[in-house]
Length: 164
Image 1 (cartoon, rainbow, N blue to C red):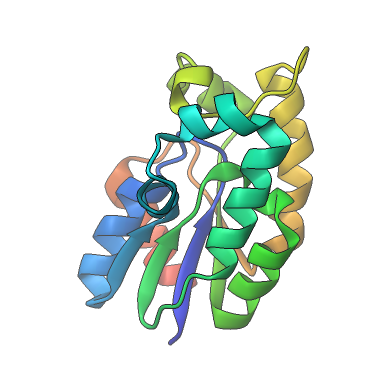
Image 2 (tube, rainbow, N blue to C red):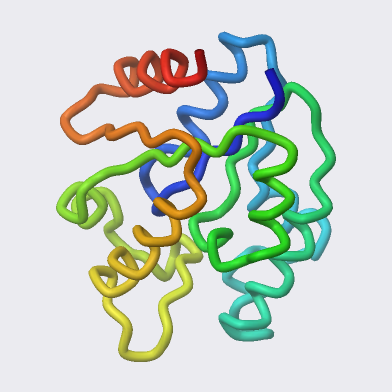
């Protein structure tokens, strides 16, 4: 099997689930937010403050599209679905798994969206962002795993089962 790319809203557990799935499969794990911070030498929120949301998406698109990996679970930031080059690249190098949760679950988990580096445009609510992104997650997903009401271990089992 090729790479596994986990997409979904911030706080769905892409990194947490990704690390454990990678361990179980004997794969590597890459959190692309950390790759972006390392390559840019700045925290995500510093990049966003400097270049704005659109400038950040350009950085995110470029760096995600350059990820070279084999037998790796990749956890990109939630906004990667706005990045056409990155998503085209991910569809070519792996299976895209959408970790889906309800808005209510996201709202509970995400106390302060801005401090998490979530890109909200002026006047945009978390609900607006959720509704906008869900369409894109569904568009790019090869597999959707709904994790509403599941414990972490159950989500991991569902992800592993979906890959077979």
